[in-house]
Image (tube, rainbow, N blue to C red; front, side):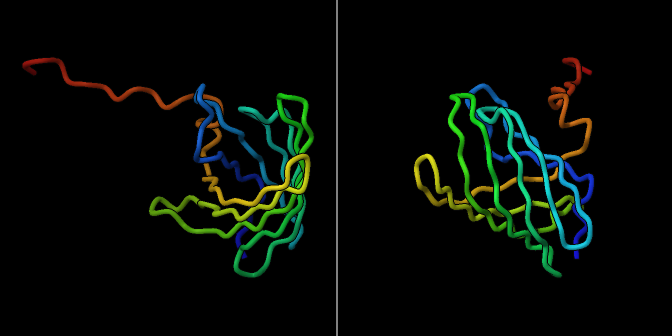
Length: 128
């Protein structure tokens, strides 16, 4: 079983302004929960269970910047990235306010990446 406790994840698709929800996960045994905020999400709470393969089945409630409150469920299947971080492939179903189904992905980030953007790559001076 993957230990999700204290891991931080960010949605792989940013909002037009570059922001995206960031979630901090917690775990005790098979019980997993998280809180998230960012982008169009003012606040989100998730709770569910994790199986032996690390698949999380959870319910969620979120408050959007528009004031809408959405509820639904999600099944998140983990994949290990080459650098050891976790990518969660999500199959979700929203029940309210507008029923919808879809897929998305969130990837594990380091605590520093959660608060600061990636600095631009340095370039060598011309002729040097």
